[in-house]
Image (cartoon, rainbow, N blue to C red):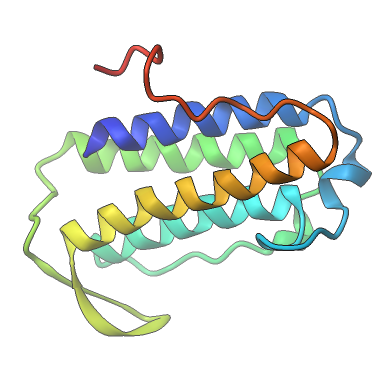
Length: 152
């Protein structure tokens, strides 16, 4: 499962680099779908990943004020900070696939395995949205190919 987190992080990093070619106005331009714009969609991906990992760890959720983020470099820095913590989670003996987890933002109980799969699928879903927006801008989107990323 960790390999797919690594895959998502590689693709996300590629999107951060891709975003450098756009002015901030394009990153924040209201679009159809996703979370409304490119920058906020990237923040949303990170927020969901981090929030669910913290829920698994029974830690308090730390929300993101999306309005405080107006550059791709600041968003990239936050992603790297979150990734460091998530790497620590994976490097420890923290995963118990069938352990039940609750989250304060929704009703229900979920297994860690369900949550980890949800995080992976959630990011892939939104990366598809970014790809559509890239095509609407007449730009080539980031490759979503798992092959040639050196993960396996």
